Image 1: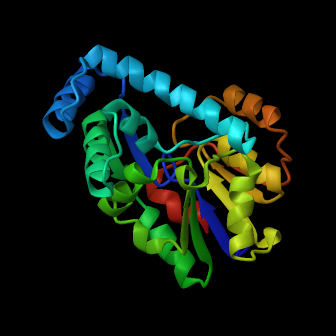
Image 2 (image 1 turned 180 degrees about the vertical axis):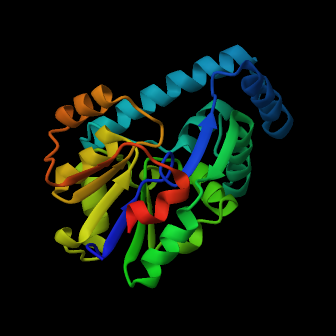
Length: 248
């Protein structure tokens, strides 16, 4: 194998997912949920509006605190402000899982992913996750898709306060495990985030075009993130059943 450390993105790379946070039924559900579980009375449209405003304000606040151009808040901060008080961990986890599941209409592991990750592990290489995500959403989705077992470590952006393509996010993983950059590859389905973070720290990357972006779109984003094409492998037509052969 060329690499000893395979660093994967999650959504759109290992998991195919679709969520719709614009759906009015989601906010109607959450309005009832907050009233029934916390006594917080807020109408659905106002709840949605306040949620979005709080997300933006918390991001701006965090960016000022940590100096990152790519801050990642913890979504529980937003819910606690909407509820008006601190919420115990178990109740917050249940709330976030309920919100996520109500907003989601698709969650499936790509065909061939389990075989690919097994082959990488059997060959003696390490498998890591580097995901722009919310811990309270992602943990259960990893469990539901039976992926948790494959990772030597899991880095989720909400834990770190920064997200891809901020190079420090990937650098923290490399530093924690004392990885040799020449033995690492970042694998993902977003050029700006996944190829971008790899370029930021000087490691190779593999772009999987799982969502069938047009070539001009990919080329534009590669230029925007200053990609060194000697360090990037593009897989433009991804057949899930061929996942193992594409990665190994």
